[in-house]
Image (tube, rainbow, N blue to C red; front, side, top):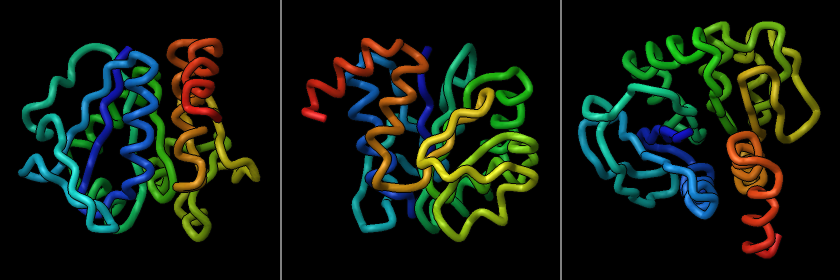
Length: 180
């Protein structure tokens, strides 16, 4: 199973870069995909990250997990990308796993994908989690959707995804190697 991690101008750097590192430590193939027309994407705090590919050239075939970092205006920019939204709809219909952190769960909520699911997001974005059961946890798995509260849980969230894809032992090995 591979991961496609989507980057938009204004993404939260910790929520993208730390998970990329964790996924790669776990031996998971992760591809960063820019939803802008250029490979270098600048985060909310001015850190530029070179994506592997722009959206139009990404391999969207086969099985993969969609990962959406939050941040502002990154979440808004992801939400405004028609191709990404169509991809999310297609993957959700197949029951594929979708992970979103911070403000990004609001995208899934506005699309109706959180209906009757438990979810969490950055404080203040709960109203966008349409028909979801708002959790008090910092990381939530509900069906095929994983959500997390914000930057402070980016590494534990990434480890939860590793556990889902490669098992508890692999997640624990990665955590131990990072002195967690």
